[in-house]
Amino acid sequence: MDTLTLTLAPAFTLFPILKPPHRPLIFHQVLVLIITFLAYASFHASRKPPSIVKSVLGPSVGSNLSIPDSNFDPVQSNLSPNDSVWVPFNGSDGTHRLGELDLAFLSSYAIGMYFAGHVGDRIDLRLFLVFGMMGSGLLTIIFGLGYWFDVHSLGYFMGVQVVCGLFQSIGWPCVVAIVGNWFGKDKRGLIMGVWNSHTSVGNIVGSVVASGVLEFGWGWSFVVPGVLVIVVGIIVFSFLVVRPRDLGFEHPGKEIEMNVEEENAENLEKEELEQKGLLEKENLDSEPQAAIGFLEAWKLPGVAPFSFCLFFSKLVAYTFLYWLPFYIRHTAVAGVHLSHKTAGILSTIFDVGGVFGGISAGFVSDIIAARAVTSIAFLLLSIPTLILYRAYGSISMITNISLMFLSGFLVNGPYALITTAVAADLGTQDLIKGNSRALATVTAIIDGTGSVGAAIGPLLAGYVSTRGWNSVFFMLISAIFFAGLFLIRVAKSEIEEKLNKGEGFWRSVSTN
Image 1 (cartoon, rainbow, N blue to C red):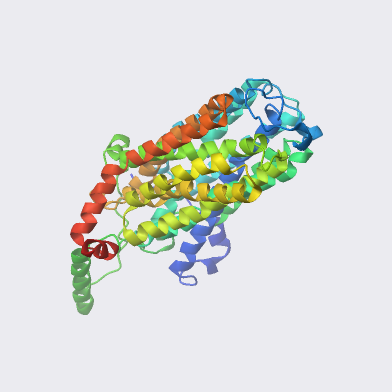
Image 2 (tube, one colour; image 1 turned 30 degrees about the vertical axis):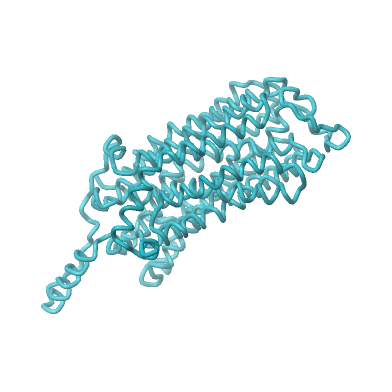
Protein backbone atom coordinates (compact mmCIF):
# COMPACT_ATOMS: atom_id res chain seq x y z
CA MET A 1 0.00 0.00 0.00
CA ASP A 2 1.48 3.34 -1.06
CA THR A 3 1.47 6.55 0.94
CA LEU A 4 -1.68 8.51 0.18
CA THR A 5 -1.77 12.10 -1.00
CA LEU A 6 -5.45 12.90 -1.12
CA THR A 7 -5.17 16.44 -2.49
CA LEU A 8 -2.48 18.95 -3.35
CA ALA A 9 -2.15 21.88 -0.94
CA PRO A 10 -4.80 24.54 -1.78
CA ALA A 11 -2.23 27.29 -2.42
CA PHE A 12 -0.97 25.45 -5.51
CA THR A 13 -4.47 25.40 -6.96
CA LEU A 14 -5.08 29.05 -6.19
CA PHE A 15 -1.62 30.15 -7.39
CA PRO A 16 -0.52 27.96 -10.33
CA ILE A 17 2.65 30.03 -10.62
CA LEU A 18 3.96 28.08 -7.61
CA LYS A 19 3.99 24.88 -9.65
CA PRO A 20 6.78 23.71 -11.95
CA PRO A 21 8.06 24.74 -14.43
CA HIS A 22 7.46 28.23 -13.00
CA ARG A 23 9.33 27.29 -9.83
CA PRO A 24 12.36 24.92 -9.79
CA LEU A 25 13.01 22.04 -7.43
CA ILE A 26 15.27 24.09 -5.15
CA PHE A 27 12.43 26.57 -4.54
CA HIS A 28 10.15 23.82 -3.31
CA GLN A 29 12.89 22.22 -1.20
CA VAL A 30 13.47 25.53 0.59
CA LEU A 31 9.72 26.01 0.97
CA VAL A 32 9.36 22.58 2.57
CA LEU A 33 12.23 23.30 4.96
CA ILE A 34 10.67 26.61 6.01
CA ILE A 35 7.16 25.24 6.48
CA THR A 36 8.23 22.15 8.44
CA PHE A 37 10.61 24.34 10.46
CA LEU A 38 7.72 26.62 11.45
CA ALA A 39 5.47 23.66 12.13
CA TYR A 40 7.73 21.92 14.61
CA ALA A 41 8.97 25.18 16.14
CA SER A 42 5.32 25.95 16.98
CA PHE A 43 4.93 22.48 18.49
CA HIS A 44 7.87 23.13 20.81
CA ALA A 45 6.73 26.66 21.60
CA SER A 46 3.48 25.18 22.93
CA ARG A 47 5.42 22.69 25.11
CA LYS A 48 7.39 25.40 26.87
CA PRO A 49 4.65 27.04 29.04
CA PRO A 50 4.62 24.27 31.72
CA SER A 51 8.28 24.92 32.49
CA ILE A 52 7.77 28.71 32.58
CA VAL A 53 4.77 28.59 34.96
CA LYS A 54 6.28 25.98 37.29
CA SER A 55 7.65 28.63 39.60
CA VAL A 56 4.19 30.24 39.76
CA LEU A 57 2.16 27.05 40.17
CA GLY A 58 4.57 25.28 42.50
CA PRO A 59 6.21 26.13 45.83
CA SER A 60 7.56 29.67 45.94
CA VAL A 61 11.11 30.65 46.80
CA GLY A 62 11.68 30.53 50.54
CA SER A 63 8.54 28.52 51.32
CA ASN A 64 9.79 25.39 49.61
CA LEU A 65 11.90 24.04 52.41
CA SER A 66 12.28 20.72 50.65
CA ILE A 67 14.75 22.33 48.26
CA PRO A 68 17.69 23.47 50.36
CA ASP A 69 19.20 26.81 49.45
CA SER A 70 21.50 28.24 52.04
CA ASN A 71 21.96 31.39 49.98
CA PHE A 72 18.32 32.42 50.18
CA ASP A 73 17.87 36.04 51.16
CA PRO A 74 14.25 37.26 51.18
CA VAL A 75 15.42 40.85 50.79
CA GLN A 76 17.23 40.07 47.51
CA SER A 77 14.88 37.40 46.18
CA ASN A 78 12.84 39.59 43.81
CA LEU A 79 9.62 38.20 45.23
CA SER A 80 6.49 39.75 43.78
CA PRO A 81 2.79 39.73 44.62
CA ASN A 82 2.30 37.22 41.79
CA ASP A 83 4.34 34.56 43.62
CA SER A 84 1.20 32.90 44.99
CA VAL A 85 1.05 29.15 44.39
CA TRP A 86 -1.74 27.20 42.71
CA VAL A 87 -3.48 24.25 44.29
CA PRO A 88 -2.81 21.31 43.81
CA PHE A 89 0.84 22.16 43.06
CA ASN A 90 1.54 23.95 46.35
CA GLY A 91 3.05 22.50 49.50
CA SER A 92 6.19 20.50 50.12
CA ASP A 93 5.17 17.88 47.54
CA GLY A 94 4.45 20.49 44.86
CA THR A 95 7.50 19.55 42.80
CA HIS A 96 6.28 15.92 42.84
CA ARG A 97 2.93 16.94 41.35
CA LEU A 98 4.66 19.08 38.73
CA GLY A 99 6.91 16.17 37.79
CA GLU A 100 3.87 13.91 37.48
CA LEU A 101 2.27 16.49 35.21
CA ASP A 102 5.30 16.32 32.92
CA LEU A 103 5.12 12.53 33.02
CA ALA A 104 1.46 12.58 31.96
CA PHE A 105 2.29 14.59 28.84
CA LEU A 106 5.57 12.92 27.89
CA SER A 107 4.46 9.33 28.50
CA SER A 108 1.43 9.74 26.24
CA TYR A 109 3.71 11.53 23.76
CA ALA A 110 6.12 8.58 23.77
CA ILE A 111 3.35 5.99 23.35
CA GLY A 112 1.66 8.03 20.66
CA MET A 113 4.95 8.40 18.79
CA TYR A 114 5.08 4.70 17.92
CA PHE A 115 1.53 4.70 16.56
CA ALA A 116 1.94 8.06 14.81
CA GLY A 117 4.88 6.81 12.75
CA HIS A 118 3.03 3.64 11.82
CA VAL A 119 -0.04 5.60 10.73
CA GLY A 120 2.03 8.29 9.04
CA ASP A 121 3.47 5.77 6.57
CA ARG A 122 -0.05 4.99 5.38
CA ILE A 123 -1.99 8.25 5.08
CA ASP A 124 -1.62 11.79 3.79
CA LEU A 125 1.14 13.27 5.93
CA ARG A 126 0.02 16.86 5.34
CA LEU A 127 -3.48 16.27 6.68
CA PHE A 128 -2.16 14.11 9.52
CA LEU A 129 0.29 16.83 10.54
CA VAL A 130 -2.41 19.52 10.45
CA PHE A 131 -4.66 17.30 12.56
CA GLY A 132 -1.91 17.04 15.18
CA MET A 133 -1.27 20.79 15.17
CA MET A 134 -4.92 21.76 15.56
CA GLY A 135 -5.42 19.30 18.41
CA SER A 136 -2.22 20.43 20.15
CA GLY A 137 -3.19 24.09 19.94
CA LEU A 138 -6.70 23.45 21.23
CA LEU A 139 -5.51 21.35 24.19
CA THR A 140 -2.86 23.92 25.13
CA ILE A 141 -5.57 26.58 25.22
CA ILE A 142 -7.83 24.33 27.32
CA PHE A 143 -5.03 23.91 29.88
CA GLY A 144 -4.71 27.69 30.16
CA LEU A 145 -8.47 28.11 30.61
CA GLY A 146 -8.03 26.45 33.99
CA TYR A 147 -6.72 29.80 35.23
CA TRP A 148 -9.91 31.74 34.46
CA PHE A 149 -12.27 28.92 35.48
CA ASP A 150 -10.33 28.56 38.76
CA VAL A 151 -9.70 24.84 38.23
CA HIS A 152 -7.74 23.14 41.01
CA SER A 153 -8.27 19.50 40.06
CA LEU A 154 -5.10 17.54 39.38
CA GLY A 155 -7.15 15.17 37.22
CA TYR A 156 -8.16 18.02 34.91
CA PHE A 157 -4.58 19.11 34.24
CA MET A 158 -3.32 15.53 33.95
CA GLY A 159 -6.09 14.60 31.51
CA VAL A 160 -5.45 17.61 29.29
CA GLN A 161 -1.73 16.83 29.20
CA VAL A 162 -2.31 13.18 28.29
CA VAL A 163 -4.52 14.04 25.31
CA CYS A 164 -2.23 16.90 24.27
CA GLY A 165 0.74 14.54 24.31
CA LEU A 166 -1.02 12.23 21.86
CA PHE A 167 -1.64 15.08 19.43
CA GLN A 168 1.93 16.36 19.84
CA SER A 169 3.33 12.92 18.99
CA ILE A 170 2.02 13.27 15.45
CA GLY A 171 4.36 16.14 14.59
CA TRP A 172 7.85 14.66 14.58
CA PRO A 173 7.41 11.53 12.42
CA CYS A 174 5.52 13.62 9.87
CA VAL A 175 8.03 16.46 9.47
CA VAL A 176 11.08 14.16 9.37
CA ALA A 177 9.44 11.89 6.78
CA ILE A 178 8.50 14.88 4.62
CA VAL A 179 11.97 16.42 4.77
CA GLY A 180 13.50 13.00 4.09
CA ASN A 181 11.33 12.74 0.96
CA TRP A 182 12.76 15.99 -0.41
CA PHE A 183 16.46 15.57 0.39
CA GLY A 184 19.05 12.90 -0.29
CA LYS A 185 21.89 11.84 1.98
CA ASP A 186 24.44 14.32 0.62
CA LYS A 187 25.10 16.94 3.32
CA ARG A 188 22.06 15.65 5.18
CA GLY A 189 23.78 16.18 8.52
CA LEU A 190 24.36 19.89 7.90
CA ILE A 191 20.95 20.48 6.30
CA MET A 192 19.12 18.74 9.10
CA GLY A 193 21.39 20.29 11.72
CA VAL A 194 20.29 23.73 10.56
CA TRP A 195 16.69 22.61 10.12
CA ASN A 196 16.57 20.91 13.52
CA SER A 197 17.26 24.24 15.21
CA HIS A 198 13.46 24.53 15.07
CA THR A 199 13.46 22.68 18.40
CA SER A 200 15.55 25.32 20.13
CA VAL A 201 13.97 28.20 18.24
CA GLY A 202 10.55 26.94 19.31
CA ASN A 203 11.72 26.68 22.90
CA ILE A 204 13.07 30.22 22.75
CA VAL A 205 9.87 31.62 21.25
CA GLY A 206 7.75 29.68 23.74
CA SER A 207 9.85 30.88 26.67
CA VAL A 208 9.83 34.53 25.62
CA VAL A 209 6.09 34.54 24.83
CA ALA A 210 5.06 32.63 27.96
CA SER A 211 7.32 34.75 30.18
CA GLY A 212 6.18 37.97 28.56
CA VAL A 213 2.48 37.43 29.27
CA LEU A 214 2.95 35.68 32.63
CA GLU A 215 2.39 38.91 34.55
CA PHE A 216 -1.17 39.06 33.20
CA GLY A 217 -1.95 35.59 34.58
CA TRP A 218 -0.43 32.17 33.91
CA GLY A 219 -3.36 31.19 31.69
CA TRP A 220 -2.13 33.54 28.97
CA SER A 221 1.18 31.65 28.92
CA PHE A 222 -0.76 28.71 27.47
CA VAL A 223 -3.40 30.44 25.36
CA VAL A 224 -1.01 32.51 23.23
CA PRO A 225 1.29 29.59 22.23
CA GLY A 226 -1.82 27.48 21.59
CA VAL A 227 -3.17 30.05 19.14
CA LEU A 228 0.28 30.18 17.51
CA VAL A 229 0.19 26.44 16.74
CA ILE A 230 -3.25 26.73 15.15
CA VAL A 231 -2.18 29.65 12.94
CA VAL A 232 0.91 27.79 11.73
CA GLY A 233 -1.27 24.73 11.15
CA ILE A 234 -3.34 26.75 8.67
CA ILE A 235 -0.12 27.67 6.82
CA VAL A 236 0.91 24.01 6.70
CA PHE A 237 -2.47 22.98 5.33
CA SER A 238 -2.27 25.66 2.63
CA PHE A 239 1.32 25.30 1.38
CA LEU A 240 2.97 22.00 2.37
CA VAL A 241 3.73 19.41 -0.35
CA VAL A 242 4.60 15.97 1.01
CA ARG A 243 6.63 14.50 -1.85
CA PRO A 244 8.50 15.83 -4.92
CA ARG A 245 6.52 13.56 -7.21
CA ASP A 246 3.29 15.29 -6.15
CA LEU A 247 4.55 18.21 -8.24
CA GLY A 248 6.06 16.07 -10.98
CA PHE A 249 9.65 15.99 -9.69
CA GLU A 250 11.67 12.82 -9.38
CA HIS A 251 12.99 11.93 -5.93
CA PRO A 252 15.98 14.27 -5.39
CA GLY A 253 17.91 11.74 -3.31
CA LYS A 254 17.55 8.85 -5.72
CA GLU A 255 20.81 9.20 -7.62
CA ILE A 256 22.77 10.26 -4.53
CA GLU A 257 21.80 7.14 -2.65
CA MET A 258 22.94 4.77 -5.42
CA ASN A 259 26.49 3.47 -5.45
CA VAL A 260 28.90 4.69 -8.10
CA GLU A 261 28.85 1.54 -10.23
CA GLU A 262 25.05 1.41 -10.40
CA GLU A 263 24.83 5.11 -11.17
CA ASN A 264 27.38 4.97 -14.00
CA ALA A 265 25.77 1.88 -15.51
CA GLU A 266 22.36 3.50 -15.42
CA ASN A 267 23.66 6.71 -17.00
CA LEU A 268 25.31 4.78 -19.85
CA GLU A 269 22.14 2.83 -20.45
CA LYS A 270 20.09 6.04 -20.53
CA GLU A 271 22.50 7.64 -23.01
CA GLU A 272 22.19 4.67 -25.35
CA LEU A 273 18.43 4.69 -25.14
CA GLU A 274 18.29 8.44 -25.73
CA GLN A 275 20.44 8.08 -28.85
CA LYS A 276 18.00 5.50 -30.22
CA GLY A 277 15.04 7.62 -29.25
CA LEU A 278 13.65 4.84 -27.09
CA LEU A 279 13.77 6.52 -23.70
CA GLU A 280 10.34 7.40 -22.37
CA LYS A 281 9.62 9.51 -19.34
CA GLU A 282 8.86 7.31 -16.37
CA ASN A 283 7.78 7.99 -12.85
CA LEU A 284 10.32 5.92 -10.92
CA ASP A 285 8.30 6.28 -7.75
CA SER A 286 5.07 4.99 -9.25
CA GLU A 287 5.52 1.44 -7.98
CA PRO A 288 3.99 1.11 -4.52
CA GLN A 289 6.30 0.17 -1.68
CA ALA A 290 5.16 -1.85 1.28
CA ALA A 291 5.34 -0.12 4.63
CA ILE A 292 7.97 -1.69 6.87
CA GLY A 293 6.79 -3.59 9.95
CA PHE A 294 7.38 -2.29 13.47
CA LEU A 295 9.53 -5.23 14.62
CA GLU A 296 11.30 -5.37 11.29
CA ALA A 297 12.31 -1.73 11.68
CA TRP A 298 13.76 -2.45 15.15
CA LYS A 299 16.06 -5.07 13.58
CA LEU A 300 17.60 -2.65 11.10
CA PRO A 301 21.31 -1.99 11.81
CA GLY A 302 21.86 0.97 14.12
CA VAL A 303 18.21 1.53 15.06
CA ALA A 304 18.40 -0.06 18.54
CA PRO A 305 21.70 1.51 19.77
CA PHE A 306 20.78 4.98 18.55
CA SER A 307 17.29 4.60 20.04
CA PHE A 308 18.64 3.77 23.49
CA CYS A 309 21.27 6.50 23.22
CA LEU A 310 18.48 8.95 22.50
CA PHE A 311 16.58 7.58 25.51
CA PHE A 312 19.25 8.98 27.83
CA SER A 313 20.03 12.05 25.69
CA LYS A 314 16.40 13.18 25.73
CA LEU A 315 16.19 12.41 29.44
CA VAL A 316 18.84 15.09 29.94
CA ALA A 317 17.55 17.54 27.32
CA TYR A 318 13.95 17.42 28.51
CA THR A 319 14.91 17.74 32.15
CA PHE A 320 16.49 21.05 31.20
CA LEU A 321 13.51 21.91 29.01
CA TYR A 322 10.99 21.47 31.82
CA TRP A 323 13.00 22.39 34.92
CA LEU A 324 15.68 24.92 33.95
CA PRO A 325 13.52 28.04 34.58
CA PHE A 326 12.47 26.58 37.93
CA TYR A 327 16.11 25.82 38.79
CA ILE A 328 17.22 29.35 37.85
CA ARG A 329 14.38 30.85 39.87
CA HIS A 330 15.32 28.83 42.96
CA THR A 331 19.11 29.23 42.68
CA ALA A 332 20.64 32.60 43.50
CA VAL A 333 22.83 34.13 40.81
CA ALA A 334 25.42 36.46 42.36
CA GLY A 335 23.41 36.24 45.59
CA VAL A 336 20.12 37.33 43.98
CA HIS A 337 17.05 35.23 43.19
CA LEU A 338 15.69 36.25 39.79
CA SER A 339 12.03 36.98 39.03
CA HIS A 340 9.77 34.51 37.19
CA LYS A 341 9.99 36.49 33.97
CA THR A 342 13.76 36.97 34.12
CA ALA A 343 14.36 33.29 34.93
CA GLY A 344 12.19 32.22 32.02
CA ILE A 345 13.91 34.49 29.53
CA LEU A 346 17.39 33.64 30.86
CA SER A 347 16.70 29.93 30.34
CA THR A 348 16.56 30.56 26.58
CA ILE A 349 20.37 30.82 26.59
CA PHE A 350 20.43 27.02 26.89
CA ASP A 351 18.32 26.77 23.73
CA VAL A 352 20.47 29.33 21.90
CA GLY A 353 23.43 27.07 22.62
CA GLY A 354 21.33 24.18 21.37
CA VAL A 355 20.83 25.87 18.00
CA PHE A 356 24.58 26.16 17.44
CA GLY A 357 25.18 22.71 18.92
CA GLY A 358 22.77 21.02 16.54
CA ILE A 359 24.21 22.78 13.50
CA SER A 360 27.79 22.06 14.59
CA ALA A 361 27.08 18.38 15.25
CA GLY A 362 25.53 18.01 11.80
CA PHE A 363 28.41 19.84 10.13
CA VAL A 364 31.08 17.80 11.93
CA SER A 365 29.31 14.51 11.24
CA ASP A 366 29.19 15.37 7.52
CA ILE A 367 32.92 16.14 7.45
CA ILE A 368 34.02 12.96 9.22
CA ALA A 369 31.06 10.90 7.92
CA ALA A 370 30.58 9.32 11.34
CA ARG A 371 27.38 10.11 13.26
CA ALA A 372 28.15 7.93 16.31
CA VAL A 373 31.68 9.29 16.76
CA THR A 374 30.33 12.85 16.65
CA SER A 375 27.60 12.06 19.17
CA ILE A 376 30.02 10.44 21.64
CA ALA A 377 32.41 13.39 21.41
CA PHE A 378 29.65 15.85 22.31
CA LEU A 379 28.36 13.62 25.11
CA LEU A 380 31.78 13.23 26.74
CA LEU A 381 32.46 16.97 26.64
CA SER A 382 29.07 17.74 28.19
CA ILE A 383 29.90 15.88 31.43
CA PRO A 384 32.58 18.31 32.72
CA THR A 385 30.51 21.22 31.40
CA LEU A 386 27.50 20.29 33.55
CA ILE A 387 29.76 19.90 36.57
CA LEU A 388 31.15 23.39 36.01
CA TYR A 389 27.68 24.86 35.49
CA ARG A 390 26.41 23.46 38.77
CA ALA A 391 29.56 24.45 40.69
CA TYR A 392 30.23 27.92 39.27
CA GLY A 393 27.05 29.00 37.46
CA SER A 394 25.83 30.96 40.48
CA ILE A 395 28.99 33.08 40.86
CA SER A 396 27.92 35.77 38.40
CA MET A 397 25.53 36.38 35.53
CA ILE A 398 28.37 36.15 33.00
CA THR A 399 29.54 32.72 34.17
CA ASN A 400 25.93 31.53 34.39
CA ILE A 401 25.18 32.58 30.79
CA SER A 402 28.48 31.25 29.43
CA LEU A 403 28.22 27.83 31.06
CA MET A 404 24.50 27.56 30.27
CA PHE A 405 25.21 28.28 26.59
CA LEU A 406 27.99 25.68 26.50
CA SER A 407 25.76 23.12 28.25
CA GLY A 408 23.02 23.64 25.68
CA PHE A 409 25.56 23.43 22.85
CA LEU A 410 26.89 20.04 23.98
CA VAL A 411 23.68 18.48 25.34
CA ASN A 412 21.52 19.30 22.31
CA GLY A 413 24.18 18.45 19.70
CA PRO A 414 23.82 14.66 19.71
CA TYR A 415 20.10 14.89 20.54
CA ALA A 416 19.54 16.98 17.40
CA LEU A 417 21.79 14.80 15.27
CA ILE A 418 20.14 11.51 16.22
CA THR A 419 16.57 12.72 15.82
CA THR A 420 17.22 14.10 12.33
CA ALA A 421 20.17 12.99 10.20
CA VAL A 422 20.65 9.63 11.92
CA ALA A 423 16.93 8.80 11.78
CA ALA A 424 16.78 9.78 8.11
CA ASP A 425 19.92 7.75 7.32
CA LEU A 426 18.63 4.64 9.06
CA GLY A 427 15.20 4.98 7.48
CA THR A 428 16.60 5.12 3.93
CA GLN A 429 19.58 2.75 4.23
CA ASP A 430 20.52 0.35 1.43
CA LEU A 431 19.26 -2.70 3.34
CA ILE A 432 15.68 -1.61 2.73
CA LYS A 433 16.51 -0.42 -0.80
CA GLY A 434 15.76 3.22 -0.17
CA ASN A 435 12.16 2.52 0.82
CA SER A 436 11.05 5.97 1.94
CA ARG A 437 7.92 4.37 3.33
CA ALA A 438 10.07 3.11 6.23
CA LEU A 439 11.25 6.58 7.18
CA ALA A 440 8.33 7.61 9.39
CA THR A 441 8.35 4.23 11.16
CA VAL A 442 12.10 4.31 11.91
CA THR A 443 11.87 7.95 12.98
CA ALA A 444 8.98 7.12 15.30
CA ILE A 445 10.88 4.23 16.89
CA ILE A 446 14.00 6.30 17.54
CA ASP A 447 12.23 9.39 18.82
CA GLY A 448 9.56 7.34 20.57
CA THR A 449 12.20 5.49 22.58
CA GLY A 450 13.90 8.80 23.28
CA SER A 451 10.57 10.22 24.42
CA VAL A 452 10.30 7.53 27.09
CA GLY A 453 13.51 8.92 28.54
CA ALA A 454 12.11 12.42 28.09
CA ALA A 455 9.10 11.40 30.19
CA ILE A 456 11.18 9.83 32.95
CA GLY A 457 13.72 12.66 33.27
CA PRO A 458 11.40 15.50 34.35
CA LEU A 459 9.50 13.16 36.68
CA LEU A 460 12.70 12.06 38.42
CA ALA A 461 13.85 15.68 38.62
CA GLY A 462 10.66 16.58 40.50
CA TYR A 463 11.38 13.94 43.13
CA VAL A 464 15.19 14.09 43.21
CA SER A 465 15.21 17.90 43.53
CA THR A 466 13.80 17.57 47.06
CA ARG A 467 17.18 16.12 48.03
CA GLY A 468 19.06 19.04 46.50
CA TRP A 469 20.08 20.08 43.01
CA ASN A 470 23.43 18.28 43.25
CA SER A 471 21.46 15.03 43.11
CA VAL A 472 19.67 16.19 39.97
CA PHE A 473 22.93 16.99 38.21
CA PHE A 474 24.39 13.64 39.26
CA MET A 475 21.37 11.99 37.64
CA LEU A 476 21.91 13.96 34.42
CA ILE A 477 25.62 13.16 34.24
CA SER A 478 24.91 9.45 34.79
CA ALA A 479 22.38 9.52 31.95
CA ILE A 480 24.94 11.11 29.62
CA PHE A 481 27.44 8.38 30.47
CA PHE A 482 24.97 5.64 29.55
CA ALA A 483 23.99 7.47 26.35
CA GLY A 484 27.59 7.33 25.17
CA LEU A 485 27.94 3.72 26.28
CA PHE A 486 25.28 2.54 23.83
CA LEU A 487 27.14 4.05 20.87
CA ILE A 488 30.60 2.66 21.56
CA ARG A 489 30.17 -0.39 19.30
CA VAL A 490 28.64 1.68 16.51
CA ALA A 491 31.42 4.26 16.78
CA LYS A 492 34.05 1.51 16.69
CA SER A 493 32.50 0.12 13.50
CA GLU A 494 32.43 3.59 11.93
CA ILE A 495 36.09 4.22 12.71
CA GLU A 496 37.20 0.82 11.39
CA GLU A 497 35.15 1.24 8.21
CA LYS A 498 36.44 4.72 7.47
CA LEU A 499 40.06 3.84 8.19
CA ASN A 500 39.84 0.82 5.87
CA LYS A 501 38.37 2.91 3.08
CA GLY A 502 40.67 5.86 3.75
CA GLU A 503 37.99 8.40 2.85
CA GLY A 504 38.32 12.19 3.24
CA PHE A 505 39.03 13.14 6.84
CA TRP A 506 39.97 9.57 7.73
CA ARG A 507 42.68 9.41 5.06
CA SER A 508 44.65 12.08 6.95
CA VAL A 509 44.08 10.23 10.23
CA SER A 510 45.32 6.91 8.91
CA THR A 511 48.49 8.45 7.42
CA ASN A 512 49.53 10.16 10.67
